[in-house]
Length: 206
Image (cartoon, rainbow, N blue to C red):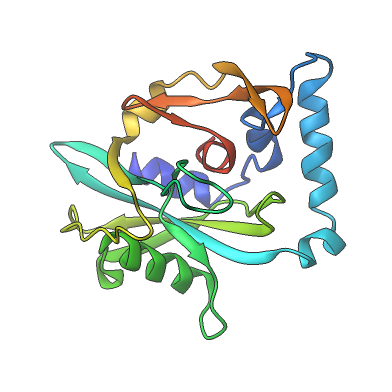
């Protein structure tokens, strides 16, 4: 899995096509995929990208019981932009660091993952998230062994260790009809470990 992943990260990435599969869409059912692609293309314009703040997340892979795994967290219900959502460890960039350092620092602050134990092997396409005003840079790293988890309860309500194979077995086409901000929408999701992964995190994992 790791060698294949390294090779994929070194090649052309699917970018907006992968994002669009998991983007929240109009419930009208008309041209929803092309609408999503157009939305992401609009946000990839230099002017709009420059208006977004920078953030980074870590997909931290490690071996457990012969399986490649990585952690996901559940944000507190008190969080302003993404309350209660399943996410990757990460957060906003600080002035004195680069984005890779941001991903490692946030994973350490939120979950106790030691930066020296992580080897970054690549980066996915940055994802614009207009609702929170961030451009998210997802980094993929190999962790030497399962961390001794030290959860920051102010930033993390719960966490889950997800098998990579379980994510690959999930149906990308599965969606549910929700009401968000008063609108009926189709929400593509990953259903893993009895948790619903949607929105920006689903787009990154896609």
